[in-house]
Image (tube, rainbow, N blue to C red; front, side):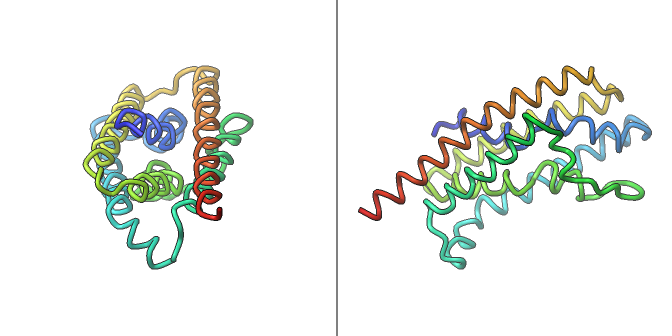
Length: 197
């Protein structure tokens, strides 16, 4: 996997376009400057969480005695379920908490940006080729930066684009994520079968 393909995968998993309505809803009544600072803060927290998973993921795998094929297959299944939710329903219904006051870490940084699927993806990338950690870090930062620009622009505009536009974009991303999930599942299955033979 190249840096570009890894960055695109992480961008799809983070789903910044799908997160726009929640960010605008929670931060739309705030002063624009304060809202932008809050988005930057939550994005930095999410990046820190994902970097911890990137570099500490192998230790977790070793402690739990989880093999790479099992991680790939389970990651593919999780991504597939999320992709189906993006295509046929509202992915934001998974997180129904309505925090009181100013959001802090939950639900914006975690799980909306640094969710289980994003953590599993960076963990899987590192597990597949630890020697390319600088590539995975670059891909993570690139995807994070692109998502941050989208969220900052949306909050700064303080309005949600057309509902149909958002729905269409989220479903398109869901379709792309479906193919990635199937490939991840097949890769894990192929590795398992090669070990079993």
